[in-house]
Image 1 (cartoon, rainbow, N blue to C red):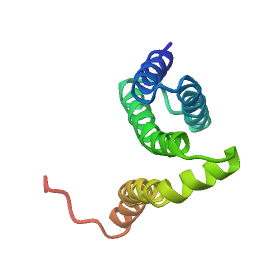
Image 2: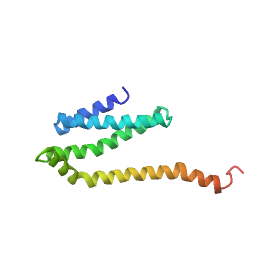
Image 3: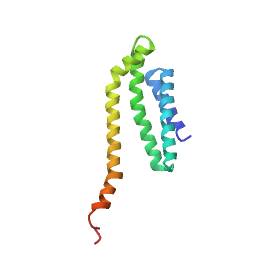
Image 4: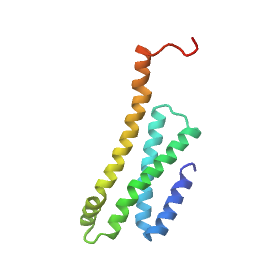
Length: 132
């Protein structure tokens, strides 16, 4: 239920914008798979489902839509066989989607630095307490 309504909303909006029932359905299947993988990672990491984690899932859904929508659109307007259309879609949108993925990698690198590296440095050489 928590992810069903947002996925249904994505499906309806995508179907209205693209006019492709099949493309919209496939995009939602891929997005559902992404959310399932994220929920599994949350379970394995013992992350509780709360307001913060739900916001993160919603943001992930939005980012996933951004990546998938470009590829679906490029596939839909390409001509030829399915493999040719996939190749054309990736040729046309691959660099943009990869660039967006690299931006996402920057977010992960920033989070790693803030949540792993900085605490280690603070443990080893952190300044004295501001309350002293």
